[in-house]
Amino acid sequence: MRRFLTLPDVAEVLNISMDQTRSLVRSGELEGIQVGGRGQWRVEEAKLDEYIEHQYALQRQAREQRRHESTT
Image (cartoon, rainbow, N blue to C red; front, side, top):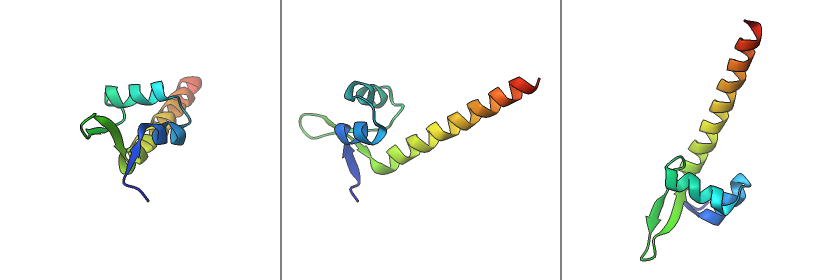
């Protein structure tokens, strides 16, 4: 398995557009690094996994919040 992914790879994994992928990385929501003379972005696979797990956690929290609000 590769350690670093290109932005097109990340976009494919998340099934989102390149613009959305760039936005996630530039905002810091998804941690990436710029490498090489042309500053190409790379995202470590472990960071992508962390991002995905964080998104699952946010969804769980939102679901619990909705559940709590519907019972009060």
